[in-house]
Length: 457
Image (cartoon, one colour):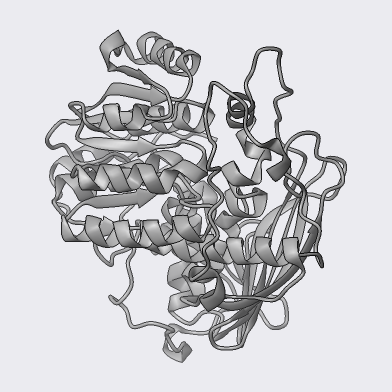
């Protein structure tokens, strides 16, 4: 399949203003991006939201030209390195001038990749190392920051970046506990007051199949939403065995994805993507959660490897959430939403069916490949971020992702305790996962990092 675009979109971008690029317009011709079979006419559909009342990004191939933007990367691991190159691929006049990480080897590794692949030199004086490296980077000569540290640190880093007037890209999740949630919400308001642009790493919001699906559902294609199920079931993720000479803090941060205080557990760190789809499409937040989970195969850390949660949403409908990281089991990463007139699913590509199971619409992936040069949602989210910055159109995705993020926290805490957890209870909770004795040089109280047992105090 050819990925080249036969139509020159570069000429289109140069001669098109950002009218619509940041408003309620589509992501290309619907005739190119969708196909319909046996569907009712649009006149019979009752929209869930009025056209023009909801945000649709214009997912163009590259950002419009404009002022140079100098970025700093906070967190130089796998995702931070990936986001660095995604940012550079988003358009012209984009560069990286500073790096920060807890560990020097990660900073130097990303600096080497930038030099080899993009001919970008990061001088030693712009390579910041340590738990406070984020402050040094933000205080340096950067216009925007990409925050890809372990999730527990993101609220603090976002807060400092906003105080200093920097536009932020935050990887998801944006917090791991109630204290972090409140920091994110307060900081998002401060960012909005400063007309800053904040985009998050919820790449499905910049994936054309999801955006077109959202538009269809808002147009009433499946009727009123009555419930759904979201899944992220996959094999076990990576882990780091402790090496001789590593301190407690050093080991946990290097093995961060397996520790609940750092990652929030995988229901928060990973499954938030799927929960986000339901809260985005439905416009609802959960009022309560009852869940369970267990730890059966994980090798390091203190978190679970499976969760199942029943969420009751604001209007009384239910969402079932299922996630698992165990090798050798049935895998499924998808979303399903039921409506009064039909259903939508991503299990076999984004598609809508009527109540009899007939396909009414499905996203045309071949047409997307034929008509767009850029189909990587990880790049498109940076294209959208840059377009907002260069056109001085503020955007706040931090408070948006905070809703499914808090839903995941509710589900996790219900599974850990065995109790029903409410939105009001958790958002007001004093829950703060950050260790009081966090350090990289000495010992920490490792007795606090234990696997939760539900039904106990």
